[in-house]
Image 1: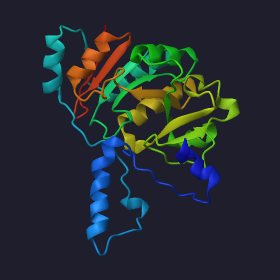
Image 2: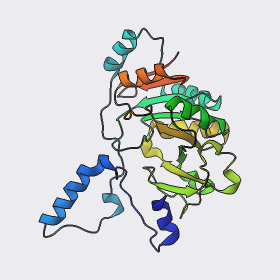
Image 3: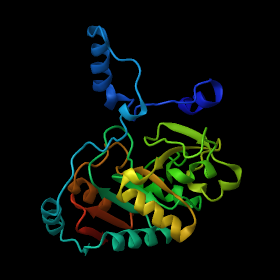
Image 4: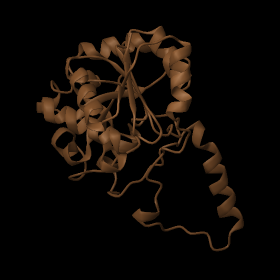
Length: 267
């Protein structure tokens, strides 16, 4: 909330907040502190090209790691060798109101799921918020974030500029009045939403939201971290499967490391 108000209450218009600014980023902060203490020529001005622009820094898993776990749990699943086929199927399920565990690529660094270890659903109606909070065993007043195509962000949110870049969910902005019904499941009581802008650099996740937009006319998904109350975000396939089986999530998508074969399965 405070980060978003920087744009409203101060003259600063070019604001960068590191995505892991909480406890998980403490080591980075400590390293920077020491650097500025001991370096006589510590750099203080950085260009946009030098900023940390991705937090997809963790582990990723191949089919050789994923498939034995599926067999251990005796689970039915379907392979998708074609990326577009998987994206289209998943977008259609989201359109139908299904809640999906989405596990792909490298795990995110920091407190936020940014489309690699996420629970996803459509951003309306309001009842989707209730369903996901029940899955995560959270209080019903707690809000959810939205992942939106960067090229559409200024149409839906009161952002400081067209194509505003906010990739780490570190800013809350007001949802435009005429879009609040369309995004009912992610609009908080004060009319705001914590957002993640998504562009082509987000790879498969961008393609998923783009396909959902083509089907529904809505360029946004409800995105919350893939974990249950009191747990960290799932890191490996076994954790994802166990959380999926504990809940009323409808589908789980597991995408292998090299994005050549995709796994989609349901209960």
